[in-house]
Length: 114
Length: 115
Image 1 (cartoon, chains in turn purple, cyan):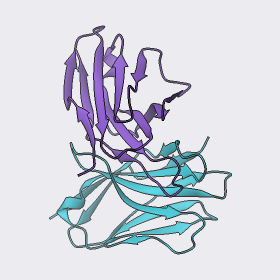
Image 2 (spheres, chains in turn red, orange; image 1 turned 180 degrees about the horizontal axis):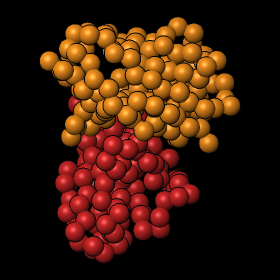
Image 3 (cartoon, one colour; image 1 turned 120 degrees about the vertical axis):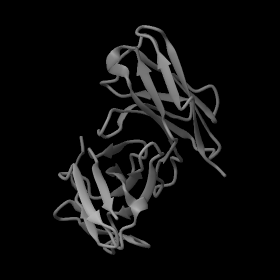
């Protein structure tokens, strides 16, 4: 089945230690998103890739970076995680070009910062 | 920027009964899409139902239906014959018709289903 996969599902890191979260998709969608979701809150868009074009949200901290080496994969790098970065990180995809399209989400990676 | 408001942080419903979740949004656009997403505990977010703003007919998907009031900027979700598996966080979301890449989410409503 076509899907959005996130690895790992749970990640524990230490304060200030860089961490990378992974997302892959078999939907062949041209747009990939990263959201941060804290407990009982709405997902907050960090950035997205439209094909190879990177689009950062204005309020996304510089501590967060992303890479998309090919259509299928996208990575979220947190250069120096702080306690406030502990959250669920959701990857989503969509196909831009279909006006009726929606987003498809992965299961998320729960990040704990010690 | 568009805003999406869900005024009910948490709701409960008895199994087999009907419940309605509220959502309002603010936009100056006339063409857009509205969505309801379901996020079960520790599981991924999935699309429940989608409504195109240019369609007057309310969308329906099995037990899920919406009441879309464009003038009032209201988009409520009705769940009929509630099941235990409906227990989840429900998020309302907005997307402009031509800005494919920007979705705006509400803060969510936690739905509890009582057996």
